[in-house]
Image (cartoon, rainbow over all chains, first blue to last red; front, side, top):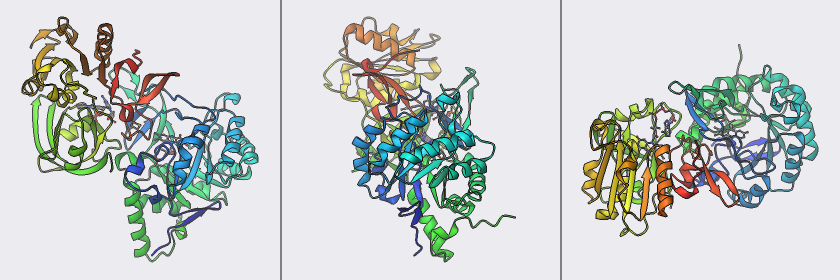
Length: 303
Length: 255
Ligand SMILES: Cc1cc2nc3c(=O)[nH]c(=O)nc-3n(C[C@H](O)[C@H](O)[C@H](O)COP(=O)(O)OP(=O)(O)OC[C@H]3O[C@@H](n4cnc5c(N)ncnc54)[C@H](O)[C@@H]3O)c2cc1C
Ligand SMILES: Cc1cc2nc3c(=O)[nH]c(=O)nc-3n(C[C@H](O)[C@H](O)[C@H](O)COP(=O)(O)O)c2cc1C
Ligand code: FES
């Protein structure tokens, strides 16, 4: 039997499948289908320092091979998560990753400090948020601001720190290197690509927010390319995500350079996707006599 | 016990009950056993990223079947309309909270607009002769389920936009004279807003079934937001988990 276990920045995951932030809530709704220990880990819905109402609806639009969302980080706030959701999630036999978002470096730091005392296994820094003090461009879109917020949080974060990169950039390798230099223990990538859809009849964007984040299968080739480029620039582990829906996609992502993967949008069409992907992955490893899933990481043979 | 699950189901019957309106009977014993009036199912459409939410129109526990009536609106519902008896369809069901019917000896008014009518049928059944349906449709062609309601003992009053069937005008024009103790409504937002206002003026409880674009259907993605009134001010609840049926007084009715 192949070994499915992976280690990311000192955290052991029973298998390389992690639920992607924002697609899995805090896990309760999916625990109806299977024990959450089916998954190697769960990345929780993005948390902010204080409760956030989120954007007005519509927040969802379908796209060719994917979807847009403009949920706008609706969440109950970090304290509520620690009090009401974490104790339950902690008991489910899966690694818990707290995903955090802020409008200023100070907000990120406060959350990282607070979560360092809580029973989470890892902190995931979502840097696709607007940097309010620096004119509103996302932290993740420049090397300087991505490195600055990572370095700031690093000082307060006593948990392994994974930085989630935005694909809305010119050179992903540069950003990855900058974030590694600033003290990140791991990278996860990619977050959503910004997109738009328009209703022909009303000539209005379908999303009330006008634009939203593209996720789903359409993202896969972009994610593979970016994971490949970034993982060749850094020594820290990369968790790959974006458009994964089958075990084959997982194997591609690992070959491209990922040490583990996250899955999101596929859960909406098939909540049982993790079970099926794991079965397929295990069969693939056994058939090809690959003793450990970790052996696939970065084994793509580029021309 | 799981309160919802995916199931590989079989289409047992299909009929086009009006141009572009389809009536499906699907075998899914487990979901039928759990389902309540007003709940919905998420239909998998092969090749599409998102499932399509369709309300449960009828529940037959004895035969383990659910009935759905839907209108072709785009690619997803078109694909569903092409399914034939004997073919499989994957459902995630039953989802959401159904109608809280309460005391069925009350005089219940059911208000439906177009494709908002189907979810009311199962809810009207237990009220029998105490129920009145006021339904609005585009035209004679689009009138659906009138006989189904009448066979439950329900009185039906129909309005059409063009006057080609029943009375010309809006559903609300049908009920000026009517006395009722509770309202259940489903349809376009302006209609729901108007009936909520009327019910409030008369001091009668009113329950509305709402629609919003969905991804997960189970309350995890927070996609299907609806603005609600809370103790600490307005907030975004979610149609799939907190609804689709809401007490009209808790909904923030804005443009
Ligand atoms: C709780 C609930 C119950 C419903 N019950 C019924 C029913 O019983 N009968 C019926 O005919 N229709 C019902 N609808 C509406 C139905 O879901 C949409 O008409 C359908 O999703 C349109 O899909 P499409 O691919 O044909 O259209 P497209 O416009 O191509 O769909 C594109 C995307 O937008 C979404 N979408 C488009 N219109 C709506 C809408 N009105 N509501 C929600 N999502 C939408 C689709 O699901 C899809 O994700 C219900 C909707 C909800 C939320
Ligand atoms: C509805 C929805 C909400 C999301 N919310 C968050 C979030 O709160 N924080 C975050 O870092 N990413 C969020 N994401 C992005 C996903 O975690 C993931 O990066 C993206 O969807 C690509 O993966 P996928 O194609 O497998 O879904 C969200 C995605 C979706 C679809
Ligand atoms: S559709 Fe995901 S929360 Fe309602």
